[in-house]
Length: 425
Image (cartoon, rainbow, N blue to C red; front, top):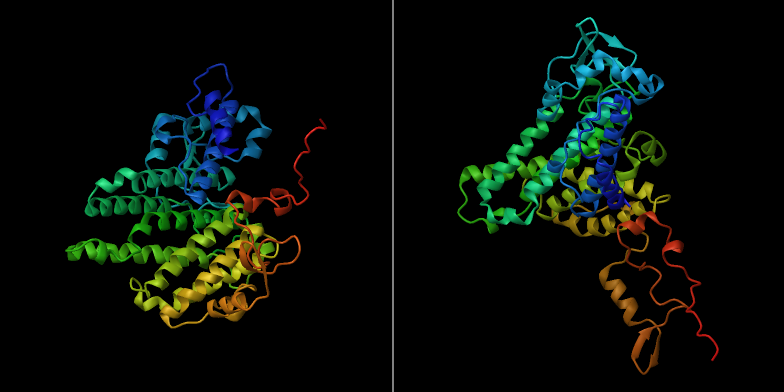
């Protein structure tokens, strides 16, 4: 559906700047926001499934969305024609957005939404009019980071990168790291997810931006979380230091993503204040990095073994609590629990029994149960006896694709289907 939507949008020309002078500015802005909404969804699905997107950002000339609240703008159709709003669409302002968000100090003036932001417009009197934080501002910052994710995927994970030397790849990683840090440093105070804040109005926006930022760091530094000593012989000391620091940054990003969540799992509250549509993906992203580092016996972070294990336990605990109402979380809990049992002994730890998947068996025990199970002999050999109408053991569910996690199993695999009968001759 996402691919079809992108193609329909390309057919309508939503990917290019609209220069129709007869079209109201509000209609143009709505088209811009529709494009950024569907491309954000496409990029998110691309990261979740590991597949490339169906468009290139370099082929698009559509400007970034304005940092204005949609509800207030739609209530007054003429608000987009004011000089203050048109100043935001000036070439100089849009160029600063595409390059980087300003990092000047926020104003001390406050409003109901929180402190004023460094990003500002020009009023009709020519004086600077700071823009208060709003959902439109959040949409602007998340869109910028999504564009960066697209650049990272095409810069680090395309097949042509294999022709580059590892030193060149390290340069690309450091370049993307600087861009990500620049994006975070330009965040308004009310959207800063690295600080504890009492403001609850924008808590959802902070967690969304935090998950997206730490996910971006994981994507940037993931190539260094491995045993590079075996793959790159005779590497210089400077190169090894970059590898270790990059791997540690990746692990720290995974831990920071888990730290965004409360210590006590509460799925209902989590769905209220977080990006519920991709929260399982973000948790599994963090869990994968933590388990990978544990499998290497925390080589890159030897002083953080206890913290890594605690973060892994917390993440698996959240997946367990979410599994009662979410099929995707249920499957994620099963996979992470099975992997946790295998990697925990590598750092001298054992997984808590309450985090284990209910159908989890020791390998020796499960093999003995199969060898001593009652069998039925036929022309094809001996097989364990199963209940009538059941072809597989009850603890082994069928394999589903990533998209099947969002469907009910009864819908995906109907049990009452019958072959059509041939007509009577």
